[in-house]
Image (cartoon, rainbow, N blue to C red; front, side, top):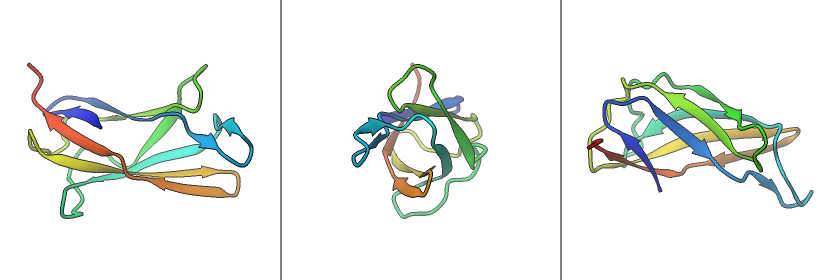
Length: 104
């Protein structure tokens, strides 16, 4: 579970994107953080979504995108990042859980 910090700019990551058929990491996909949703599936306002997530050079299929401090989240609550991936003709959707915390 990734952590997003309340009233902070944050980085959302998708790590180790892997193509099982090709038996290789995918380093050339189009990866987009479409939105962040609460536990009821409602889109959270702010944050600048949608965000294109960039490939992290030299990694094995890792991508990252910046979400700005305007994301309207509440500490101690869980959210989901809705991420779409396109690699050639292959499409995938990921929804990793995010936990909001206050930075101390």
